[in-house]
Length: 143
Image (cartoon, rainbow, N blue to C red; front, side, top):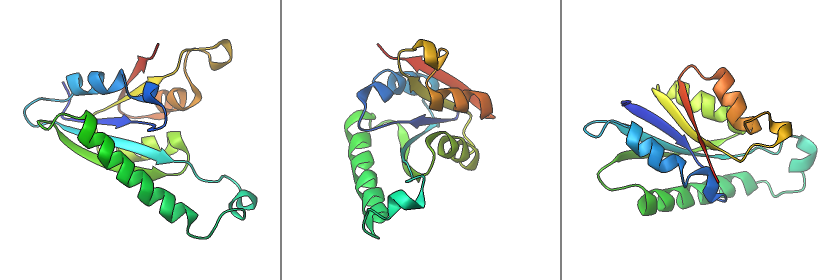
């Protein structure tokens, strides 16, 4: 069991949490463990792309994601679990690793989609987190 666990979720993809959430709940210490749930809003990647959006687009999107994540936590995480939601912004794998370090979590639990030959067994974000995280990383396979 772990004292602190980070669970990255994509609220638009149930496969990112449907099996990973139960695994994270089993791994976090029942007495005084903490579950950190994070969702990442990807950045635009290129300044040329951002010029097509209003100036306050990212701020509004981050706020909306925060509201949706809080609602998701209320609906899916048992009341007996100490949980902290986090909205992150940037490259998905960078933000997961950075949050894990900043929050000093003991483990990361994340889902990976069904592997395809081009993925070499893991999706690109899960693969990067596994390779670069200092913490234990548990990858939970979906259907």
